[in-house]
Image 1 (cartoon, rainbow, N blue to C red):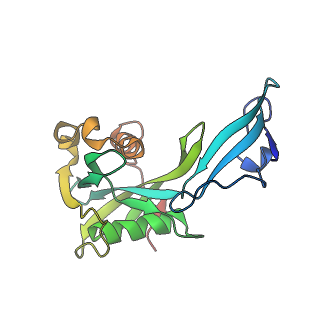
Image 2: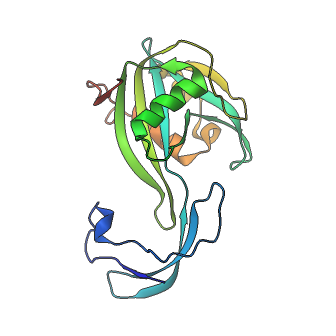
Image 3: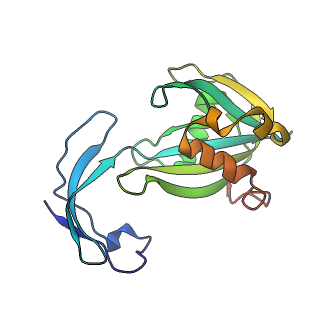
Length: 204
């Protein structure tokens, strides 16, 4: 089992500075890409011989906003949460797929909406210890519904709109129940982080 050495101080955003465990032992399959046990040397020199890592597919998540300032939401059963939740369109990236392309595809497939402009918040690790996945968070602007959902989730979600000014009086964080969905909604509606400036990435 190969060792990973974590550099002292603040680590670089470039994961190559940490290294990769080429000899990771695969324990699972299906939607779980890999479960590995890694040996890690911490910045203070302590060594951990059984640091578990779970690798799930990266995914894109979209908060869609219409030209009339309505947010597009989904209401559907999510088995990981064990209940019906309010959430956002999104799903796993296909092999070698660009996150923006995945976000555009998922918005169209799950809701039938398309957008005129996109804001990219970047990718965020979903579990800082076991890593698990990377969530790529987007806001889509100028959305309009051109068709029914072309490939809705198997839970057959209800697609609905909420005026942005009434979002948090209509939906609670408990209704959401999913951390990456809650994070994106809070980012997109917070005055300091809401992308009111021209979008950074545009539809082709």
